[in-house]
Amino acid sequence: MYKRILLTGAAGMLGTYLRPHLHKRWPLRSMDVKPVEKPMKGEEVVVADVADRPAVFKAVKGCDAVLHFGAISIEGEFDQILQSNILGTYNVFEGARRARAKRVIFASSNHAIGYYPRERKIDSDAQPRPDTYYGVSKAFGEALGSMYWSKYGIEHASLRIGTARPEPVDRRGLSTWQSFPDLLQLICRCLEAQRLGFAVVYGQSNNDRAWWDNSKVAYLGYKPKDNAEKFAEKIWAGTKDDDPNDPAVKFMGGIFCTKNPPKWQG
Ligand code: 15L
Image (cartoon, rainbow, N blue to C red):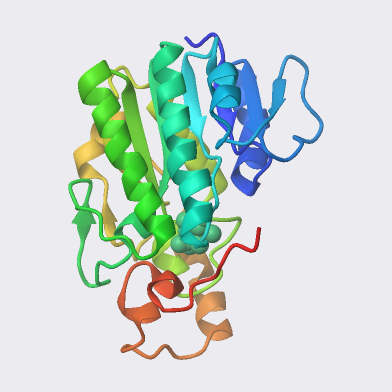
C-alpha cells in the first residue's frame, strides 16, 4: 500500500519501539537528529534535524506517508520549541505536500488539551487548551494538519497521545496510559483505514478510568487491548495521597499544568 514511510524521531523511545514493527509492514526511512541504532535490512536512515528545512524536504522525497514523531517531547524554552516543534512540524507537512505524500500521522499530545479539568469527558472535537509551550506546539501541528487536509487533501491524524510507556508510573497514568502495542495498532489503523480524512484521536489504552472519548473516530477501527487497571493496586500503594487543589491533580495535563513542568535540557 505504501512505497516507503518516513518516521521522524526514529531514535526516540517511541520510534525505537515502532521501527521494527513498522518495517515488517512497509519499507521504512528512519530519521532522527541522533544516530539511529542498528538499521535493519532495507531500512534507510537519515541523520538530520527536523528544523533543517532542506534536509527534511530531501528526507520526505519518495515517501508516500509520514509519521512525524520528531520533536522536543516535554516543555522547553520557547525558542527551542519554536525550532524543533513549530518550524520542524511545518517543514514536515510542507515536505509531505511537495513529495505528494498521501497521509501524515502527527504525534500530538494530551498536553494540547492539558487544561481541561479531569471531571470532564472530552472527545475529538475538544478545542485545544494547551498547558505548556510544548502543548501549544502540538495544537499548532493539529491546526497545520487541518489546513493541509482542507487545502491540499493530505489525509492526517493528530494523535493526542496520553502516557505511552511500558507501564503507567502514577495515578494519573491509570487514566492516560497507552501501551506500546496499542500505540502501534493505532498508527497502523491510521495508515491502513480506507478513509482517514482529518482525525483527532486520543492515544490511550482501553483504560477503565479514561477521560477521553474516541467514539467520533470509531470508523478507524482502533480497538485498544490493554487496560491500565491491571497496575492500579501497585500504583495506588506506591504513590501518596494527591492534593485536589494542586493544578497537577486538577487538570488532565498533570505536572505540565504547574509553573514548574519538567523541562528539556537540550
Ligand atoms: C507527553 O506528551 C510527553 O512527551 C511524555 O513525556 C509524557 O509526559 C506524557 O505526555 C504524559 O502526559 O504522560
